[in-house]
Each structure stands twice: as C-alpha cells, then as structure tokens.
Image: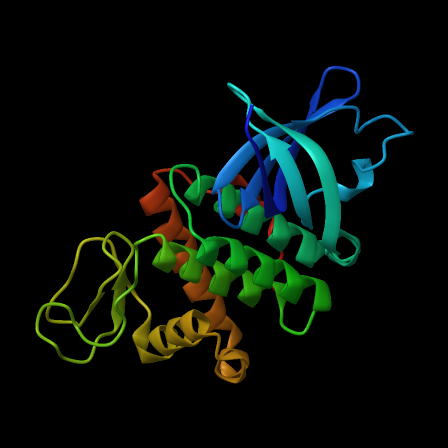
Length: 239
C-alpha cells in the first residue's frame, strides 16, 4: 500500500472498537481524508494526545480500501486548550470544523486548509470576537468553495443595493427584488464586505443589531448552499 505524508487539521474523531479512533482530517494537499489511528485510546499510546480536534499535525499515512491508517504523527500546533477554555470560542470552533467537514467532502484546496487553520488560530488568541471570526470564516469558506457573494451593486440594474439574496449571493435595490432577499441596508452590506475582507476595525465599528442581522443572513446563505443547516450554529454564543 502506498504511503504518503501531509499536514492536516483534525476536524472530528470517533471511537472505533476498544482502543482505536477514526479521524476526519482536512489535509493541505490531499483534501479531506478519513483515517484510523490504531491504539490511540490506550494510556500507553505514543501519539493519542496529538490527534484531538483543533490540532494541526504532520502525518505519515498509508492508503487503505475504505480508511487510511496513521503510522506517524508530529504535532505542529494545538489550539484546543485555549479554545475549549472559552465557551463562545469552543462553540464557534465547533461550527467552523463542521462547516469545513461539510464543504470539503467532495473537493478542497490548500486555501480551505489555510482558512481553517487561520480561524482556529484567531479563536485561540482571542484577538477578535468569536462570533465575528465565525461569520468571516463562513463567508470566506463559501467564497473559495465557489459561492462568492457579489456585494457591490444591484445585480439587475447596477444601482445602490440594500438587500442580500441568500439563494444567489447577489444584492438588490428596492426596485429589483430578488428571490430569497433579506433587507440589510448599506450598513449590513458594508459589514458583510468587512467580514469577507477581514477588515477587523470596520467589523468592530458595526453596531450589534447589524452584526446580529448579518449573522442570521450568513447562516441562511450557508444553509441554502448546503441544503441543510449546521447543527453547531444553534449553540454559538453571540456577544
């Protein structure tokens, strides 16, 4: 069986048998990978603690018919301790890895991997609110997956928009209503632009009602594209 090596972030883990664990990994170069880590739940395991969610690792794996197998692990970064210590950060991180798992099942790129790493790092540092880090991540993740929101001018007539369509990702003016449009006003649309660009001073300047409205629209946009909502979003704490 061919062996390969890659960097990966651990998205999810499941128990397998008495001592093994199944991992859902987002790798840098091989997309999403499901692999078994044998014996990692034993107290004597050499690398069990390195394969927890929110951990970045350098892995040696060999290919299997249904599951690959982890043969060697070096930890590159662990964001779990700082994230789990803060409940809002933990709920946001849970939504981030769920979205990443859903959006990279069929196809992914290095951009997806780096975006997940960046979001988890930001949550662990706590330099921005966990809710806006999550919203920014979801918008960017959708964008690099092919659903790029067009936020500048009305998609029908080119005039100043005030609503966003969760069906198409386009914006509309009052005279050109679009399917699934939600009125956000210029303030809400500017906040979305700031989230998409990672303009944190502009994000911080937005009023809480604006942030809350945009969060709901982003969740609805994600749900429409995935045809199902993210379970973790219902537990996210908004500040």
